[in-house]
Amino acid sequence: MLELDHVFCIVSDPDRAVRRLEDDGWVLDAGQAHRGQGTRNRRLLWPQHYFELVWLTDAAEAGANPLRLDRRADWTTTGASPFGLGFRGWIEPADRHEFWLYDALGPRLWIHGDGQRCPERPLVFVLEADEREVRERRGQLRLMSEAVAHRRPGELREVRLRGPSAPSLPPFAGPRISYEAGHHLLELVVGSDSPALSVSDVLVVRG
Image (tube, rainbow, N blue to C red):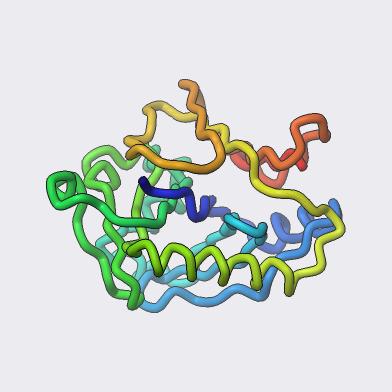
């Protein structure tokens, strides 16, 4: 069965989003640029999963990339979802007709076809990994999270999504992903009893 690996949200003002998180006690890594995608990130790391703040750095490059993250970055105009859900594991050959292969960054990513057919839904993709690679991935994330000294420890417990259309989710293990119809909104739940932090117009962290 697939496992949830990470969740992303595209933001228009990364400095403001980072400042809101850091003021609340969270620590993000330095991040990296995504070659050929016209985007960059910074990550909030937990022992088994991570959250990725993504923003556009080159609209022309993003527009020439098959992922078309420029449309998702301009979600207020296009209606496309600014969210993504990444899983790790192995897709059975019988199910691969629902996905297409994207390997421009090196790792083999299987992108769900809804990303193009129904851009109003979150982008769903799978980082291809066999059992050994999944174990190694878990170990890498644990070490990465230990290298970041959080003042707000915990683990991702639930992903709450709101949008005009539900994501097409494969069977998976990990934190619960819930959906309700409405305007685009992503809520990450680390501590259910904690107050909600509004990071951007479409992003809330509760931890």
